[in-house]
Image (cartoon, rainbow, N blue to C red; front, side):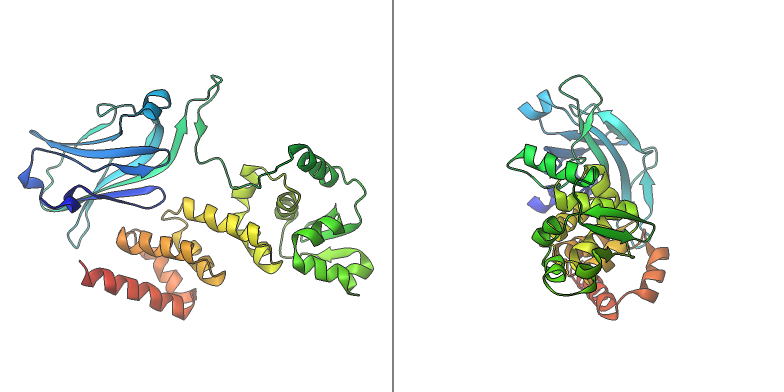
Length: 328
């Protein structure tokens, strides 16, 4: 049997194992695949019914910090109708070994099929005995070589210490410091270096951002944004990073948006990847839609996508689909 029979294809939080010849075995275990901090296995076991198991590879990490997993698992027919059997959503299940998650299929499965696992969250126990912590809650906030200096910068912003410019958002205003803005953005630097109205009036109008998003933007520039704020405002921050030429913020948004692609956001992210020239995000979205067959799950939204998306992007999607069909 070829090695491909045991290989699991993965993207950031999605794993798929194609079972090509289920009649030929009573037990099969996949090769290890990595999601989060752990290497995982899928296994199928046929007795009177078909059992599907998901579990982490035995290691020191698994023993000391076993995953607490939330996920959706499906068995999808590889036939053209792609009928699926879906297990109820698993929430915060501690999984240490191959007996901690076992799914007996009530309905007989025949022919080729795909085991599709979408990880919603992975947590580990808190070292101080508190609530379990999500391993994906750590966002790409800026790192500091001097935490005290960053804390002081943040205090300058939040307490309005010696601010010398006002930023007007769509629904409010906030004070800031020219020197910080100029150091972080060549666009702001240019504004304050020439006799533009922003320099003369000591104001900047950013009417395409709410005050909450604007505060998150400034907190990033000052080095004290919180993960929750970053994740909430990622798309607006991406727009601001592109508009004001802040490459590190753009890259932070890019990397973050790749990490949690799902059926609810994949089409929007694909359009943003094209708009802001984010190759990794575009590739990940196309792979999710085409290679992992999620176009079937978003077909209603895809009709709206076809009406408003860039023509070149639509052409690229169809090229991916055609290439996938040729290789099937």
